[in-house]
Length: 92
Image (cartoon, rainbow, N blue to C red):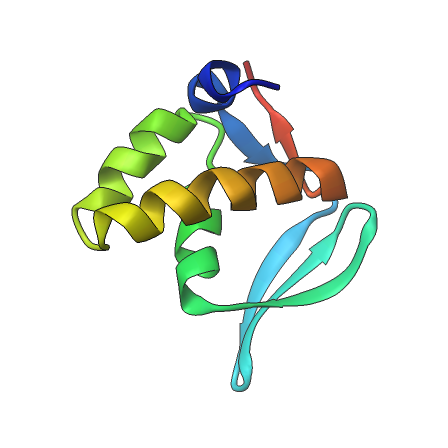
């Protein structure tokens, strides 16, 4: 998936994938991966994977709260990681 396709994609958690907040952090389980511990930035992105927003729209929301360079680097990397791990699919 090239960058244009990625930014027009609408990520949605894959069936059976869930995020859970624990006292020690945020856990992500499902897909083709072991249980992952997400940092707060990744958890904030995950919560925006609702099957309604494109990656471009998610980026715009994140840019309201985070530094430009950090969002522009982290977001596509995290989306690609989630797609490859099978914990996210594309709604359209």
